[in-house]
Length: 122
Image 1 (cartoon, one colour):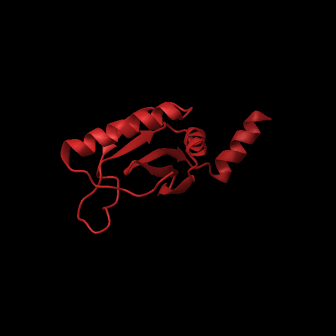
Image 2 (cartoon, rainbow, N blue to C red):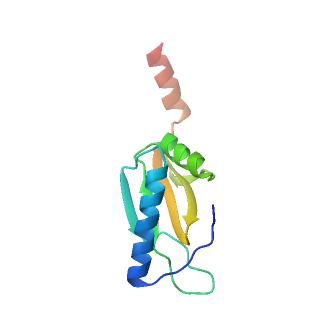
């Protein structure tokens, strides 16, 4: 999948992002909880001061859905700390110059919580 990102101003950028949203959503098995067109979440296009319009696919507390999404499109799943108790899990790519990202936030299970869950199950 191409990773080059193209800035398209105004309506052209919105229409390109809508097209990518449709193409990507129709090709992945997991259905996102929401789909958002947004430019604030994507980096500047190199050599410009412009952010491209992109697509955010949100999966509610489902790392597995993000993994399915990534696997279908040949993307790498990444994560980073969100805050002290949660992790931001995501996979990103670009199609026809439009960036997109599948993402979720999941709660970190601490060893104390995991041990408590094991004790309850026994």
